[in-house]
Amino acid sequence: MRYLTARKRAEGLGAAHTGTEHHWYMTVSAVGLALIVPIFLFVFGHTLGGTHEEVTQAFSHPAMAILTMLVLFVGLQHFRKGAQIMIEDYSRGITRKILIISATVLSYGMMATGLFAVLKIAL
Image (cartoon, rainbow, N blue to C red; front, side):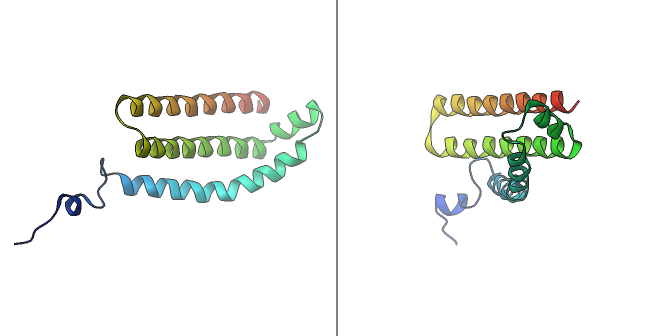
């Protein structure tokens, strides 16, 4: 007969049994961000200090608009998941729930505002 401790039975499963999926999502989004953020910063850097018309013209180009929306969407989703992991690790009870909801609302609010602004400029 094999004796398994409670820790040994739970090892690798996580509380919700989704730790592996969470880890893979964070890894894939981090690699994606590592590829698109430098391109975004390079293109965005050229518009910095320009006139309103120059900036509007740059962001109205479809490639720049799509790149900006990708950075906003993937970056804020990565932030949301990372903040959730951090909150789950360091808080308990009702505080945990409130902080997770707050981080989610903040993330989606910033995402909606940013995407709206880019679409308003692009269209």
